[in-house]
Image 1 (cartoon, one colour):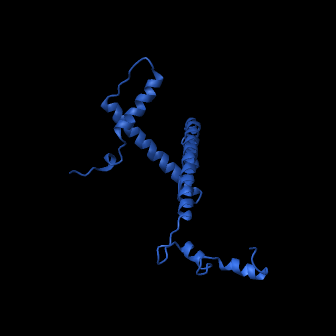
Image 2 (image 1 turned 90 degrees about the vertical axis):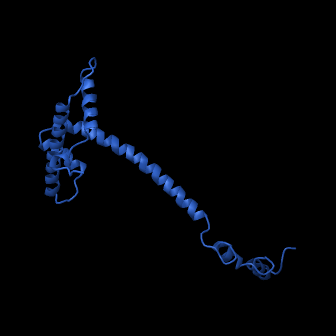
Image 3 (image 1 turned 60 degrees about the vertical axis):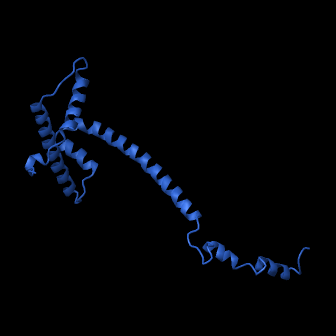
Length: 165
């Protein structure tokens, strides 16, 4: 098996690039079915790869100027403006907001599920005594006398002068 070198390792998936190009071209010319030959597909792939590298490097520079090590979405948006692609900022912001709102819904659903599981676990007895009773049952049995009567109730009766019988 041969090892891939340089640009081949960083090559973008041709099927995805072809799909993106064809979708955009079909929006531009609705009446015609546009085909993309191999050379033009390779040119699109290489152009996209170079653009991503340039955008990454510019975003990284902005991030370092802010004395951070993690590139944020705002860094990418600023990089697009610095690279003189301000027309891409608005659609990217819209996509980013859509992505965030979808993820917020997923995160909320996941946290509800997590809370439900947590409540279920808290409701179930987890520690068992030697005779198979749960820890809660064993602790509650300590208040009962040998006849199953609650010792606290007997003490109340003595203090109040007897039982109501």
